[in-house]
Length: 609
Image 1 (tube, one colour):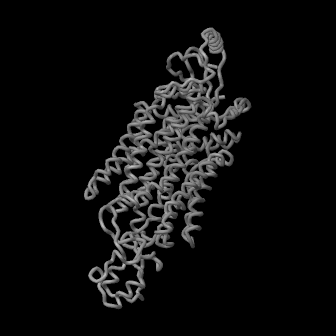
Image 2 (spheres, one colour; image 1 turned 90 degrees about the vertical axis):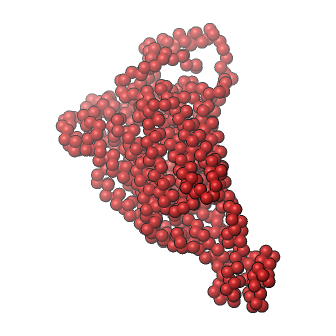
Image 3 (cartoon, one colour; image 1 turned 180 degrees about the vertical axis):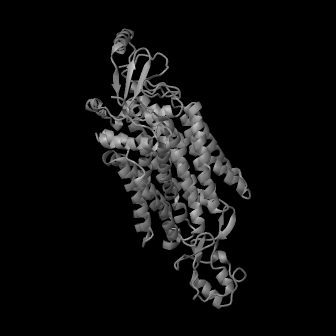
């Protein structure tokens, strides 16, 4: 049977139908941008100090000196969590003693903020921190709030693909969109921090599920030449647009409940898209619902003003159609040999530490010197050129060098921040944004790089496991921001060091640019700089000659079916792409091909059995 791309060639690549799908699916990603980062304003911690009750019998002088000073970044500031014992200073005030002249303040007894806190309203009218006093002894709840959101993202990553495979792309897209919007609305009515965070976990599940399913639906409907634009400049850029809208909303709405209400409105506006976005014809074919798939294609042809064939799917082809069975793979297959185990461990570190850098810099943007809203907007804006740069680099240059290069750029400039004088705030902000640029560029390349490294039987498993490592990175990222409470530059030193470290590790990966996608574990390239030899590989020239003759005989006549790709080996490799799979390398200017196109390649060495 012909594959889907061949059947639908008559539709063209960029007609009104494709443009509509491209922009509607991309627009559905916008709420993900501000929901994913909304915690930076919802859980912002304004300047605060211990409350001194108005009923306290204190003179003006003692009221002004009721809070001890502490040293922070080389300057003395009022303590946020301590005050002088109120009964003691009230007694001194009644006796007419003056603070500093008659009483040595350093010798006075201190106490915690037993009467609560006074929060500055210069930037925020209210946040969940001011609502439930998440400071001092309870300040650990603030980073935990962000972490629990990303726990929801992790859980959503597990279920979104399975649900969309079972119930369809369109149904799950709008169901998860409703979950994200609905539970964000319910957060407005939270009566305590516990209720807010439980709902936030569910919002995180809906947020990532909506993102993933929209990505899958777009790549299945759009043609080969449009998928690269959709998967980079479409999905990622519209996510950044949503991220840029967040500080705009927050600037004009300083109350956290009203801000949440405003952020739910765009999600509600996306619901009418149900009547414009179709189900994936590829998924319908996989479910043997051929008449529905044909109906969608007929409507697309009508929208594109193209005469569709009277019969799109030939009845004889439909009877011959047999859905390809999935080869059972286990996570242990990613550690089967020393070489693949080494690559897997390095990939897990690469994904996790890159994710830590990206989310820690994003969450910390409002804490930079200057205007919190402008800094957050710049942090979002810098992602657009980062995505464009990543797309251009992937088309022309070796993967491991460009990923390592942008990681060195990002980590290096973060390490320079500690040497910037405190008065040069603009320079510090510029270095932070440059670091965000490098790390974002690297992050956007990881899916392609990982997919190219692993062979067909374990490729999906590898991408899934390594992307899970990035979710772990996002969960721990808020605690890197938390380090700033102890020292302003400490988060940048730690993030910069880890980013440079993982950049060095990246140089030891095998190169995948311009290489044929591996089909077996034995075809995987070796790790650079290591001699990895499995125990069962014993040199035996006669045995190798016999194996070589067997392989050459098999190549002459027998096609091999490996996973979702059929490879007919006869001196060189020919690749036939499955109708339900994406050829990742082909999107980025590498050697990926469509149906019946020949790959130019060197004669491969005989694989070892």
